[in-house]
Length: 83
Image 1 (cartoon, rainbow, N blue to C red):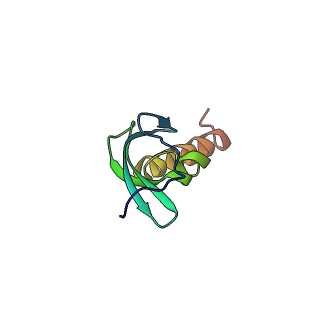
Image 2 (image 1 turned 45 degrees about the horizontal axis):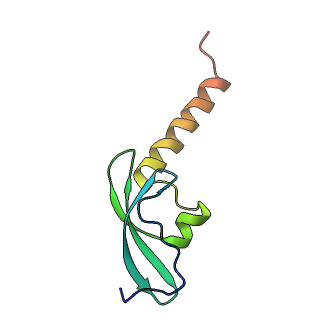
Image 3 (image 1 turned 180 degrees about the vertical axis):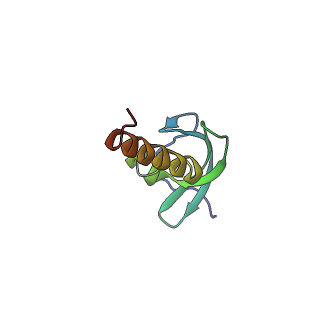
């Protein structure tokens, strides 16, 4: 990644969803990238700043998959109660 965007919004030290923003990693043209850590599982990943601010990226993919699975099984349990 190259340099720094003069228009970037500093997000270091904030929490966006389950992402803890650790550091600014640079800019690739117009998009700023941040090193983030998932507060659920500890995964560290580079995430685009615009995705963090808009809420389109709230957690790592593995935690998102687990959450979707838990929601789908909870919905099935409500539809088919065993009692």
